[in-house]
Image 1 (tube, helix red, strand yellow):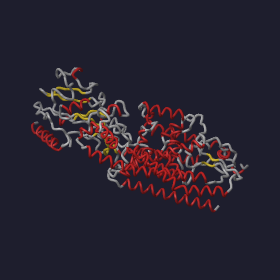
Image 2: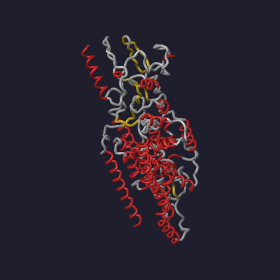
Image 3: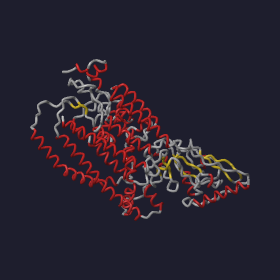
Image 4: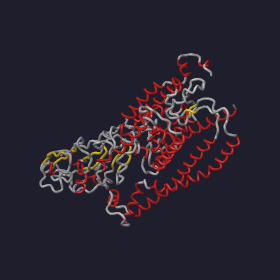
Length: 433
Length: 185
């Protein structure tokens, strides 16, 4: 027993020597005479990292199934079933974390911070929905994303958002994409996760502002279908761009469109484009001239974006904890504020010098200034390209889907008379106007 | 007709270049040390940086918080009068509620031998308020400290406590070594 004690003491001594960061033992460990040995500290293990691959598997399987349901079976009912399953699994069982929408920020942080590694499974979570979008459209949004699913089930009386308003609002997610990537890459936190309105429902508990925001969003979602997906989701912006390139995409009709107009009001997200009038109301020369003007204005709009980024830079940099601390310390030094915040108190306890924090904060400000210029330029570019896209006249002879905005939810399938004939096994080529 | 096929060709070219780009990004991520097939990341507190501000109790998405007080018995002094257990002005070393620092009676004290006592944390009662941690750091060996308990933590993509931690004590650690215990190297 004595030998055991000696060994214990030696281990404890070595541990004490090895731990420079720990405070010195004020009360040395006693020599127990009764042979008492203290218990070991219990440390329950986390969910093993390898189990993340189960989530990746469920994600890939669900998206594969969704693609089949959208492209081959054309089954809205099947999609609803899958959507409810994914809402239960990714939402309520996995508590909404980690999801592809949020993984965007992990990727941004890993690209800029050399010391931060994203586990392979999280990389897969980020990449898989994008790959599916490239080949099958936004099937992730259709039935797999829990944030989309919770909004999809509350759509009851969809109203059309006026085109000009929807067009303006659709820049908001582009802004949020740029700013959240910039903030995540700069180490200023994951904005998408911090402002996720629905995760509180999945966890059955959240702060009051979060629940209010989520509740309002869901209440609005009864009329304005999927407001978060359309006007806030940053990941959806990338999915939309890639979906535009998709090899196959959901189609309103299984065969050729008969232009019956029955699907015109089917889409609650306003993704169905009507055929253009046969007689072009505008002269070709006018269109072409406007198009040229737009191309010429592109560099100017990008430059304006860069300027906007510079204006925004201090705001963005202010999100970074070190910059915030430096700002607070500067005000404390100048006597503009009285008392300490927890942050400035922690700084004073840490023994760091004020100059060190200033240098770090200045470096971060400079980093954000450059980043914000790129971000602003990106915003300008997206804006200019959207304007060029608007000024281009395209002729359509059929009712077609806007592949960038379409969530592949399958609501329009059953409106199409050709679909009905196809389902009943009739010859669809007879259906012609 | 020619325009259509040209557009299709451009679309195809763009599609495969985006796919190559995604592959390149994924490949670069996969090459980083720490990003393995089996690896995951979890959140943990560095006790050396923690200032016991109390936000772990209130900022966790779980109620009560997934952060609990953990006791490293190896560096404990087993004192009769314990800086983590007793109120600073306690009249005696009894176990009465008026003497205890812990607001939820989550620390249990057990007699070992004269004059030593063993202190255990009842995690179901602990709310992670860090009052005992502060006491132990001020008048003790620092054997009580806060840790994220991984049987309770939901491992949010961004820890909501880390977001507000005033000393930056919470960071991601590999799930293979998920704790930062005091007194264990």
